[in-house]
Image (tube, rainbow, N blue to C red; front, side, top):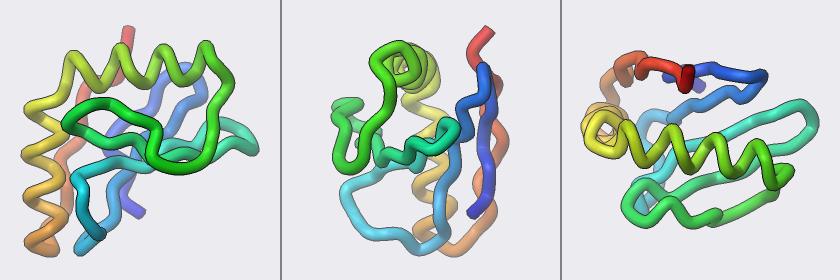
Amino acid sequence: MPEISRFYGIKIAMYPDDHNPPHFHVSYGEYKAIIEINNFALLKGNLPPKALSLVVEWSVLHKEELLQDWNLCVNLQKPNKIKPLE
């Protein structure tokens, strides 16, 4: 699974040729989640509230880049790295 960003122990990744809706995968310690790109909804899994808040903050800042990476993955191309939350 190509990692596109990492910050505060949170790993963000996308799978090539993944299913709709556009989303990304998050792992944080033993927690795993899937977040929808268009509305930042938690589709599956769970994260501690603080980690989820950081992920949503980051995804709001990088929504267009996430959608570009999603399109790359749909076309079986490697996604680009996205700047971490600082």
